[in-house]
Length: 329
Image: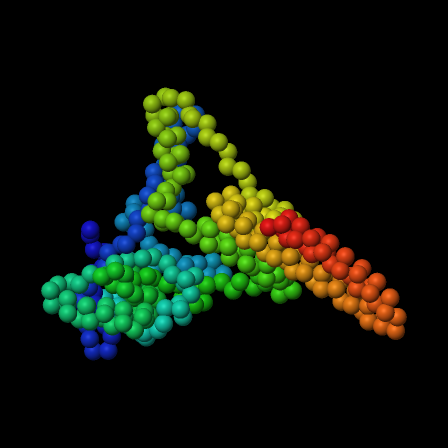
């Protein structure tokens, strides 16, 4: 792996010589522009508006045009002479908790390796200190003639560096969020949590693959070998008019393979509610029967009759409650 930057990490009076390596690479086939009629390559020419001549790469410079149309030409030599303190130094500004860094600010990712054997000890010291304190370092670094904020953190046994956007480069979200009046019910929140748990079971990030890239590879191979292109099944669009949120969540759990357990839990809760309702009705019926019996206490015949009727009705109520409980379960 070829290094792309050499310098040192500086925190306090401690200096750690390091080399910087790109930590990521994008896969894929690079497509270029061609004429659709004959496949001829389309070339983009760098032509000067002032003289009309094509300009070679070594004669390209940077420029800035103001509102009045005046252009300031900035050459590579001008940029190289700009005083950048972080040109060969990853200057640690502060050590902070990782939660303080908004992931929106993170950009490119790089590995940092010790420059030589003499750098191993301070390198490991910084790595282990970050590990034990569970912190990250906010730094500054100059890459490609641009100074950037950067995040220094531990990745396995290495230190990694993530370039960051400056705070004023992160756009204000404005009023993009839903209105505060929109709320969710506890039942919906529980169902959504159950769906999250179901989708997270046996998840393997390394098993994921770029399906679009595989289809593109197959398409190009078919064209090169003059074979017919295999027609793939169209992906069904996601519904955009969900009416019953609970039903949609339950259907999602069922399709994800967790419907049986969730269904049993839902049925158990429903059965418990029905059984509790039946028990309340039974108690209410007994209470009414007792009130009628006590209301006729002056006539012993009425009391005996009421007690007899209560005794005859009670088993029927209990039987009905048992039947209700069986249906709920």
